[in-house]
Image 1 (cartoon, rainbow, N blue to C red):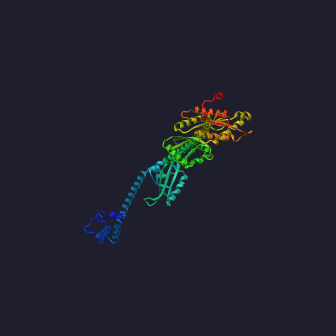
Image 2 (spheres, rainbow, N blue to C red):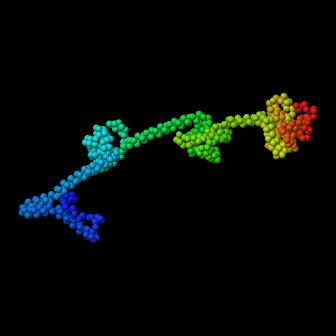
Image 3 (cartoon, rainbow, N blue to C red):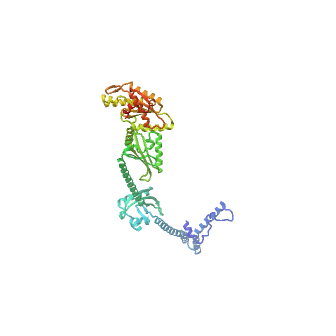
Length: 540
């Protein structure tokens, strides 16, 4: 009706509009009554315009005095003519509009780089873009006329496509990823296919499909995945090599991450800890420490190492589980892992055997091997230090020199084994009689020496206690009890004395005790420093 009205309006396009909108101005305010009056007037004007040809034909027949039948035919033809003209004009306009719409849609989909197709039932293509034709290697016209079966689409895929299209036309939607090899090029293709139902300008249902090609992304993703797999394999091989390398080393090796958690240990570390390597992985210094304060020290050291400090220290302690004494040199350094993250490398070089051997050598160098008390060298060094100390402090210091009586007869009569037993028992009794501050030593053979931090009277009291401890009880040996006595000389330190001078005075007192009947202790201060001539030969 609108097309007919437009075609028949002619020069009547200046008729008032049905509604002019807010931009139209009126001399008086527009009310519902005024608007209704204008609408009725416009409707009557259009009715009169449509009836005008018929009225004109009727008037002409009256003027020409035509018959009633002719008049009716003329009036009918005149009334039908505007409708026919309007239909033809409207159809032409619709066709032109459809062509323009088709061209617009074609231009729009050609601007899209992804292949797009529009199909009707039976997978008949009605429109494709240039990207679709270029992808399949055919012209757009060939696709529209012959389709793709036998060209780039095999029959099996064609049947699958028909089934999918029927489902889409029934209202379903489809989105899938497809991996194919192009038949005419052999090229590998990855694409996401989307299909939806729509209606064309004629009202026919159609399938609109778009292929979003993601080949570059999928190939890049696959190559990246392969590169990562190679990287992981390389890292695993590197870690296995490092593990095999450190397992050969006898030192305990611990590798920690930036959180001080163990990420790798060697066989020596697991053996020392009495744990498997797998059990150690993930533990921290706090977990392995015997006490909380030790764990905090370990964590603090790891933080300092990660900050760039290097730690080298020697530790003495006990091994976990076994409680054995151990000595180790700990070295901690910062390094970079294969993933670029900082790590703490801790190497524990156990030197227990060397430290125990050094201690034994030191003991042998300072102690008498048979009796376990200080030997002559050790005693001399300790006595020199004590004499320097009392020289400054002015405190008293005394020296006691002891010698077993007739010890040669014991060795000759019972053997050296019995003699060794006598010496050992003598030292035991000597230690029981002495105070903790007193220092005993073996001066040589059956001769013993004691350094006492006391004056002459106190020293003589200790000496007498020692003499009675030896003489009052026989010594039990492998050959039975043996009676033993000893003689001794006591000398007190004088300012400016040397050790040899102090020992010399005690030695003279000892010889005086020997010549005085043995089994006695004499004070050097109560005897002259020069022996009688009858003793001079025995002192040589």
